[in-house]
Every structure is written in C-alpha cells, then in structure tokens.
Image 1: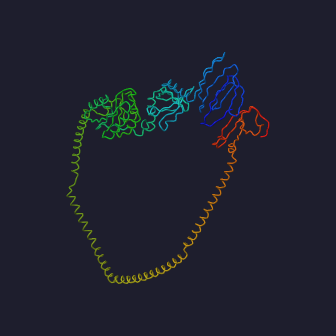
Image 2: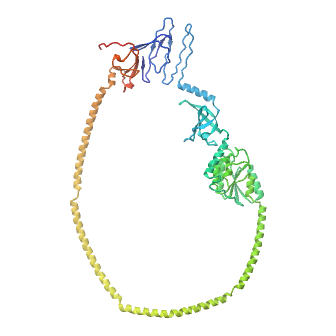
Image 3: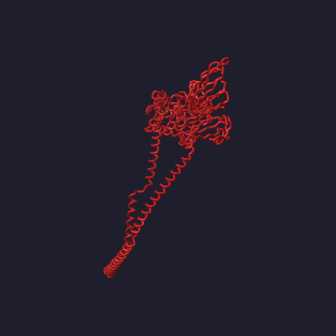
Length: 594
C-alpha cells in the first residue's frame, strides 16, 4: 500500500527487510496488503511507506538504507552492495544520476573535448540578424545538422553576407545549453568553401553598389571630367607612405607650381576605412579642385580598406572629381569603380593631373605669337575697310541742314492748318458760355436742394414713428413671454424627479440586501452538502484505479484489484487536493450489519 502526501510534508523513514527472492509484506498503519513475489523493480517516486519482508530461514537478513526521493524526473540513489551470498556472485553498485548532473557532466566533457573545432557544412534556416545583431542558422550535410550561433561582435567583422545554401567552414567551440539539453556550435570565424571571404564580400558589395547606381553602366551620376590644370590637389594617403613621395616627386618634376593639400589617414588596418572616409569628407569642404585617394601596392588584405562600403560612399558623395590610385596596375578595388577616374599607379595619377610646365609655357608662347599675328592682320583689314567706308560716307553737316529745312517747312504747314480750326473752336466755346449764363443752373440747384430737405424731414419722422411702434410691440411680446415662462414648471418637475430618484435608490439597496441574504443562505446550504464536509467527519471515497469509478458495493471490486482511497484534510478545497491511499483488495466479505 502506498500513501501519497503533499509536497513539503515530511516522510517517515522506510525500512525494507528480506532477501532477494522471498515474498514481501508491506505494512502501513491499519491497512495491510500482501503482494506476491515479484522480481525487484526500480524505485517509484514519490515513496514514503515502510516496507518489511520476512527472510527465508537460511538466507541472511539484509538491511537496505532508506532512500530519500528528490522531486525530479530521475532520482539519485546509490544502493549499498549486498553482502556476498554463499555461492552467489556479487552485484555491482548502481549509480542513478539526476538530469542536471548528467547534463553537467556531458557539458564539461563535450566543451573540454571540442573547445576548438572546424566544421564544414551548408547554411540552412538563416533569417538574418535578430534585434541584438546575433545570427542563428543551421549547418547541415547529407548525414546530420547542428545549430550554429554567431554573436553580434563576431558578425560585425564578417566580410561577406550569409545566405541559405552557402557552403562554409566554421571555426568555433561546441556549447551545451543545459536548460534545454541541446548542443550548438558557437562560431568565431566563417570562411566560404571554394572562394575566400574577401572575394565573396567584394562581389556582393559590387552587386549592391551597382544596384544602387553608384558603379557600372547604370550609375546615377556619370564620371566627372578632371580639371586640365587644377589650382589645388587634395591627397588622401598616409603621410609616411611611399605612394605620397612618388606622387609628389612626379607632380613637382612636371609642374612645381601646383599646390597640394594632404589629409593624413591610415590606409590599412583596423579603423583605417573610417579615417579615409573622414579625410575625403574633410577635403570636400575645402577649395580643392580634385581629390586623389592613393596608396602603394600590397596584398589583398593590405588593400582591403579601399573595398569597404564606407569609403565607396564617401567617394561617391565627394563634391569634386575623385581619382583612385590604389596599388599597381593589376590591383582593382571598389574605390576604382566608384571614382571618377582610375589611375594604375600613384605616379600615373600625378602625370594625369600635372601638365609639364615647360610644355605649357611653350604652348602659351606659341599661342601668344599666333594671337599677336592674327590681331595685326585683323587690324590691317579693319583699317582698310574703314577707309573704304569713310569714302562712301556723306558730310553729316550738310545732311543736318537739309533735315532742319524740311522740319521748318513742315512746322509752317502745320500752323497754317491749325489756325482756322482753333479760331472756330474758340467761337463755339463763347456761344456755349453765353447759353449757360442764360440758363442760370444755380437757381434750379437751390430748388432741388430745398425739395430734398423736405423729403429728408418726412423720412426721419416716419422712421421715428415706426421705431416707436416696434418698441411698443416688442414690450408687449416680452411681457407675454415672461408670463408664459417654463421656469416654475421646470423647478416643480426637478423636485419630483429628485424624490423618485431617492425612492428608486432606496428600493435598489433593499433588493440588493435581500439578494445577498438569499445568496448567503444558499451558500450555507451548499457548503453543508459538500462532499468535503462529509469526508472531514471521518468518511472516505473509494474508487477503482483502473477506470476511476467510485466503489459503492462489494460487487464493484474483485480480489487483487488496485483501489484508491481519498481522505479529506483541513486545508483541502477540492477532491484533487485530498490525500490519497492506494490499496489492493485481498478479500471480499459478504454484507454484514453496520
């Protein structure tokens, strides 16, 4: 018989006596069930009852220490070795580990054994970086797969973008996550299989910039022309690099008068891309006519600064043309594609931007001589043409005298035509003035003014009368409105409404109190009929374990059948919270008087 107790309740020590093959008698309080002999089974958790078993006559008694169960899936038990029986082999000790202990031992073993491994597989299930910048994906091949994790600090140093189907070689360590019992690969370095990370990053960046229109045939802004003779050249490179010396040597050997503004920046190593981009931006805010981004030759790793997206976007955003002179003629970088002109070497960039001073002076002298000769020829031609035109020109004083004579004749003819018309108009004006004097409009104006004054007086009198009448009617209407005002009726209705509201609230409180009292009476009756009340008075509920049916008569059970008995405790609120006793039916008796 086994009795289940609540978590946290103390369990009495268990004592097991008997041999390995004899029957076992289990005693637990007033109930006792004798079980047939069975082979020893592993302990079942939880178990708190004492077990006793008589030993055979000739077999020595063996005492087993009590086993304290832990509330986990697998309990740890160390069984003491049994003393050797005459003629029987000794049994080895059995060690049972908890899940946490087993996982901890596996974690220590695996992480110590695989602290640094190289794994080759195909990327699967990649969904991009999460909110914190970490990368999660699966490495798989034809036989197995393993979860892989790349922390944000490592992902920021990757030179290429992950995608599903990409075969890579991952360097890292194996980590065991104990709460879920899962192992995964913590990646510290990734390298594509068949192509280097830098080459893949180079091609991916080229494709992205081409899609945005920064490079290629569909670039948004065509390459800007370089100035023929720049006033000032901005140079972005290392102050101590050989590329600067080669550039200045070739530049000043061809034209020592050119001005150079240097912006020192590291051209390789960690953080060099930010310095180069910042230098390009600073030179763009000065008065330079062209910017040269240059450095000497080197490996792909040495030139990788100029394959960074930050540098490419800084070159594209520069307000003046940019010349890229990176490495040797066989070296190509992203900066070469974005720049307005690519120079194979720093020396070639200097040759392109600096025409030879002697050649310029010779060209200027030749052009000055040709210009002087052309001006002389043009001056002779103009003098000859002036002589021919001066012969054809008439004396302006004679022409001026003729025009003056013509104007005086025209003025005299005009005066002869205007004098008769002026005389006629004066006569007509005199006649009209005389008629106006005879009509005397001042008299008519006085009569009209007096008539207007009479009309204005009548209008004012009529307006005053109309206003007085309207005011009297308005006073009578206001008096009638005040007599029919609903204020008194509104006050009466409000008083009645307040009285009805008070009666309604009183009735509501009375109904609510009656409902509460009725509910309390029902609650008391329901509590009195609760099965837990019956159980608390010493009764119990017995049910069959195989189907959970309640045992009501002796015919519901058979000998050997496993039963469950529920007993109520003081703190039990439901049947599931009651204590439960498991028992096996040993015998069934007939009905007797209770």
